[in-house]
Amino acid sequence: MDLYETIKTRRSIRAYKKDPVEDDKLDRIIDAARLAPTAANKQPFSLIVIKNEQVKHKLKDAYSQEWFYTAPVIICACALPDTAWKRNDGRRYVDVDVAIAMDHLILAASAEGLGTCWIAAFKPEVVKDVLNIPDNLEPLILTPLGYPEIIPEPTFRKSLGEMVREIK
Image (cartoon, rainbow, N blue to C red; front, top):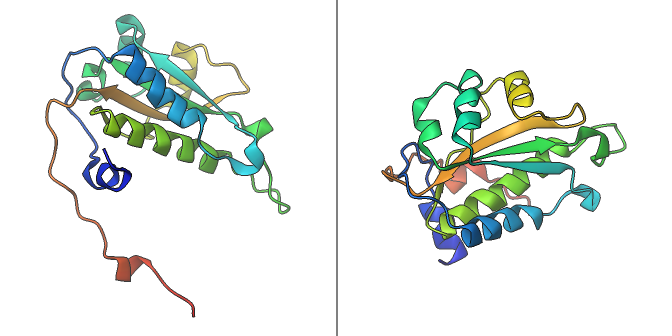
């Protein structure tokens, strides 16, 4: 699928088929995240791929929406704050770096015919405990990954005129 078409047709999916995700597709999707640009090429993130049903069940204490666990795969993107680039005012860019990597992952999944849904409203301490995440990693984003059962209609987007300011 063309990149612009992928961007236009990507949706947040909240219903998944039981069909497993093929390993070659999953590898390409994960590799897309790996190839994402990061500030000063620090690559301050780690991805955890969860397929185990028992582990997924334990994550319900972190995020309780049942539809989330119908996907065959859940991906947890973790930040490595101590390795991230810092601007001269001290601001770390780790959240931006992880977001770019996840955007690559989500668009790659869509191009492969798979669905995702960006989730940030979870309890990070529960995720850390369930996934045995070390102290130097911070779980930032979760997404289910699988074949969509239902593809929703497009949601409202502001016009370019509302979002873009050009200085000539």
